[in-house]
Each structure stands twice: as C-alpha cells, then as structure tokens.
Image 1 (tube, rainbow, N blue to C red):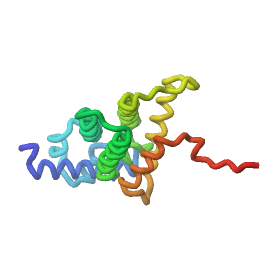
Image 2 (image 1 turned 90 degrees about the vertical axis):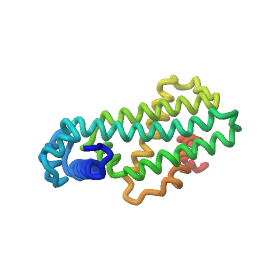
Image 3 (image 1 turned 90 degrees about the horizontal axis):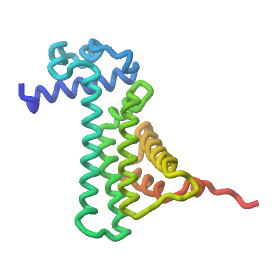
Image 4 (image 1 turned 45 degrees about the horizontal axis):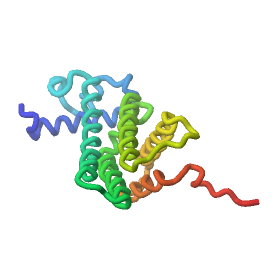
Length: 204
C-alpha cells in the first residue's frame, strides 16, 4: 500500500490518537500494543504494517515533531541570511519565529502535552531542550551578544533554555491557553526581561 494513501494516513492518525488517549491514563512503560490496537479499532497486522513496536511509534512521532520545528526555525533563519537585517527587524523576525513554532505546537498540542507529561518520554524533553539551546546560540550570534562574566556561560545557557522550555511547557499544559500570537509576544518579552525585573519591590 502507498504510504501516501488516504487509508494508510488515516490508520496512522488513529494510532496517534490512540497513543495520546492511552498516555493520558498510563505511563509509556505500562502501555501495551494491544491497548493501542483496541483503542484505535484496528487489527494487529495493521499496526505492525506501520510500526515495529511501541518504541518505533514513539520515535517516529517524536522525530516528526522535531523535524517540523526545525523546518520552521530554518525557514526563519533564511530570512536573516538574505541581507543585513536592522536590529528592530531582527526582533520582529524572532517574534515571527515564535509565531511559526507556537502555531505548530498548538496544532499538535495534545501530542506535545502527553509526551512532556510524567507519562511521556523524558528523552523528548531533552531533544526539545537541545533544539532550544541551539536556537538561543544562533540568536545570540546574530545579535553579536555575549554572556555576563558574573555567571559561567554554560549556566547562562541553562538558565535561558530552562526559562524558555518551562514557559512553553506551561502554555502547552494551560487548560485555557493564550493564542499562539499572544503567547509569542509573551515569549518575546520574556527574552528581553531579566527575572528580577518581573518583580516590583515596594520601597520602604
């Protein structure tokens, strides 16, 4: 069967939705192939035509998510490569990158949510953090930025990646999330605001 065939794609969607539903109720370690088959209402043969086992399913779905994120970021990177971009436009393009990435995450919110949950896959969190770290380094070089000498560079990177990851994860888990456009503005503001600047300390 052609892998672009509508029936093939529909079966993959059924399996993906089955995985999401099952991981809302149990950990990946507890998940069995029979759970996915029953939930998706497909045959065992149909499952194994698509995936070798549950690990192959997880790896392929995560790989697709990471690839889609990378493609959106690389598309944004290409805009910087065309010519010398003024500083104000750099910030606008960064906000545009956030928009692109968040719109995709919003489309796949249910899958991101279970994969990043305690029932999901810690390896996926590490892959996302690595992608975010690479992106932060790219933007820093673009802006000719350098780190403060108050904190070792490796910890500065961890702080920035941790903040970005935690904010996005919080948005994914939010039962009443802001739109991707609104949250992109929040992320952009968070990049330009030091943590202590978020607190207003009354003067005595």
